[in-house]
Length: 192
Image (cartoon, rainbow, N blue to C red; front, side):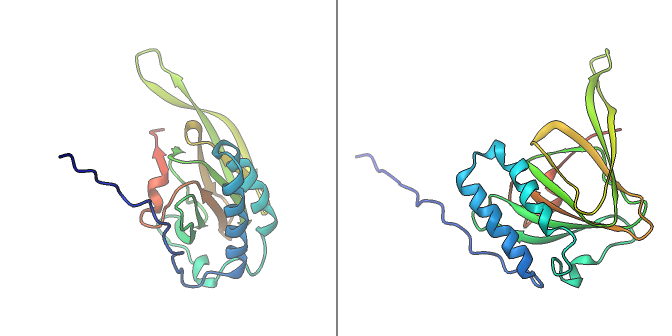
């Protein structure tokens, strides 16, 4: 006699309490949740970047503990993790001279500058002719408070962010996956 085993449907996680989470972050997360319920995933990055923009620069967006940086490298602060694991919201705190490696992402993303300014350099993969790929810079821009952008998952939107602002900078990132345990796992790092 064959035995049938049925697994229980996946249950959503309870919203993870994040110390110091501000009401403005909860409002932003609620808007993203509503988008995630009605939009197909390929449309989410641009839509999330659009709804992120009005929150940038708001004095009550971040608790002071989420504005603390590090002398060694930019610092990530998890601000919200969706209970259905569809997205995470992070603040990245930058000191002058800190930068990401050249990278793509394992999920879609939307980013906005909250404070200070960042430089963004976009790259494309090129064939070097000897069976290897290399990154070639194709675009440079400066992002100031209120500016937003978005990326698709994979290596189609390769970039590097850097802080040149003497006062440092803070950016808000929304990524299309759960990053509550390992925020750094969003990056696909490339040599440059």
